[in-house]
Amino acid sequence: MRDGRRSLFTIVAAALVCLVVASPARAQVSAPSGQFKDVAFEQKLGESIDLDLVFNDEAGEPHRLGEYFHEGRPVILALVYFECPMLCNMVLNGLVVSLRPLSFDPGDDFEVLVVSFDPTEGPDLAKAKRANYVEDYGRPGTEEGWHFLTGDSTAIAALTDQVGFRYVYDEEKDQYAHASGITLLTDEGVLSRYLFGIDYAPKDLKLGLTEASDGEVGGVVEQLLLLCYQYDPQTGKYGAAIMFFLRLGGALT
Image (cartoon, rainbow, N blue to C red):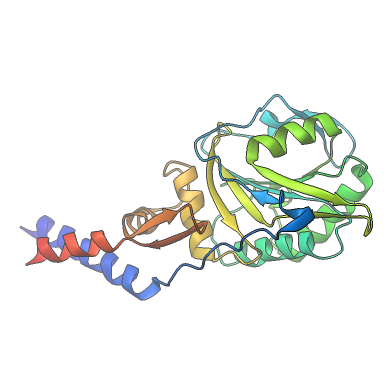
């Protein structure tokens, strides 16, 4: 009887948590028309990236992408270019802000993979960018979980195509027009979740990492929250699962 009461209490507590933290999902912004109509972030959920693609690390050493994927450890992938005047910095700033409240640690619980899609950028830029964001993140001992990579046009084209990241070079402004967001992958390189924009709710990031790790990252609370929330591929966010509450209400009454 006591075990039954404990189980009921756990379910009710989880439902209350869901109700407290639930918030409306925001819609994804459509790509502009005209010459930039091809700029988009197409979701390819369930598909895999090629872990044999080779990119250079901050020291200029070549590595297979597979070297950054470890069992039970999901990967956050950010496609940016390091000399971007604004949007890419906002993507990375938003990622750092979202990661700070989480108890998960880069290098232990997940990996952060930042890949430049500009083939003219090299290791020096990657090294400087990594140093800035590791310092900004401000959690000593997690440095090894941050990786800033550069590569040639062939590897970049393959990776961006596999992720569904489409961008256009604007010769007049000498800049890239591109979408913004991050991608969560499983330890086998399977595309698990997309979070769009430059502002990622820590709740969404936590749930996405828990889901991408198949429960290896996070604890009981995160597992219960996954019952309360469902991923909406249209918005790239997690929304409260109304049916869960309806079924819970029916069970309790």
